[in-house]
Image (cartoon, rainbow over all chains, first blue to last red; front, top):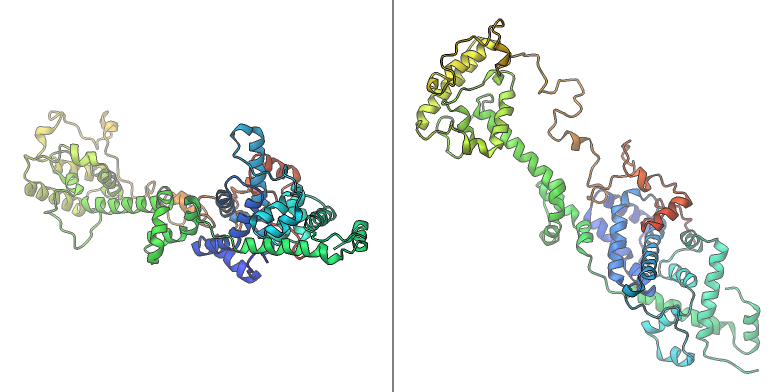
Amino acid sequence: MSVSPMSAADFDRTLALARGGDSRAFGRLFDWLQRPVHTFARARHATDPEGTVNDVFLQVFTHLGDFDGNDVQFRAWVFRITRNRLTDEYRLRARRPDEVAAEAPAYAATASDDVEAAAISSLDDAWLQQQLDLLTPDQRDVVLLRVVADLSLADVAELVGKPVGAVKALQSRAFRTIARNNSSSAVSP
Amino acid sequence: MDYTDADFAALAEGRTPDDFVSGVQVFVTRLRSETAGTPPIVPGLALSEFIGVSDVAPIVASGPIESHRRKKMFAGVSAMVGTLTGKVLLGTAVAAAAVGGAQAADVVDIPGLPDPARPADVVEVALVDDSAPIEAPGAEDGTAGEEAADDADDPAVDADDPAVDADDPAGEANDHGQAVSDFAHETELEGCEKGQAISDLASEKADDHRQNPEKDHDPCDKDDPEADQIVDEPVDEDDGADEPDEGEDDEGEGNAFGKDKERPNENSGNGFGHDKAGDDGNADDEAADDKGDGNDTEEEVEEEHADGDDLGGASRGRGRSGR
């Protein structure tokens, strides 16, 4: 799992302590989800992934008193904030293209013609990023929320505001794209 | 995983479904490894105030604090000065000044404190000087202590008060002051008469300073047209205007921190002033206008999103759990 496990009881206890101002509880919540949020931000080509993480958790802790739910719902809430924040960043970029920091060629780039070379040569971050860059924004978000955030199809559907069936289709297409672009064998009939 | 016609075609071409799955498996595995292996980031200053905020409160409340957290704590102290710390320090200063002022006017008898020969830097000295008329009709109702506290807070009282007169030996002034204080406590006079008597006694050595030494009128004489102009007010033992009436709701006026006392715990959850959404039963839910009701409509979600608010509508996390 991408998200380190925290039992429901442990989360409830930690959340209660955090609401009471316990700094250790805040720290636990931060440590629990900072890596997935950071990965999500980097995969989404955030201008400042670490800054995004800080802003997200600042928002989370500021409004912690408004949250009411379990650990899964908390995770969904955190990633909703993360996704919205990144979307706002992209909108700002669109309005001020001359001020936009250089964005990685996320969607303009096409898969390398030499897929095999890419598949063979890369077993690192660049390869992961390449696979994600092959996807549409919606496909990418669904995959990241499913794999990095460890959210269910239903939770992802509610987060992105789409029906469960649509989310399932997006996931399938994304995985097929990745699989298709990483197929190392093509047996001629 | 659902297979399409293309998948079956691939199968027919010799590519088994495992080929499709393996690519996805590698991707998923690596993505999760990438996530787990991401080095932790260093929280920024604002976020550090949350992570270290609980260390500040114990210090203010004289609680223990782990030494290794002190550095983090001081990093966020500047943000706390204007809030909890500032309020506590201010309250402490006011309380100390009030006690000191009350003692100076001999309204409150605090045993153990030196009386006549006090250090010159104690502001209470100026309050018992005999070179100026003493308006002491309020001594009985306890307001003198508050007035003294107000004076004690005002550095100008100490610096500019002509009562602090270098020509008047401190010992003689203190003796006179003690005499006035003793009279105030022991006299059986009441009301305006008492006040006037105290004033007269205090003014025994200040005839030269009287602005109108020839003026002769009885301020307690109700027929005196100038009586209303006298600052001295008749003592009314029932006057509780400045004191909280027992059993009555004074709406927090009797509490120096009345307004703060009625507010919910400001440190709950974030220490930065965001009120809880009614979890403590506080009807004045300031967060209700924000995200407190948990029933955001789609329009509200869109509005929040458009405004750059990253909270998102479902702050109450209504997501369906389970996979």
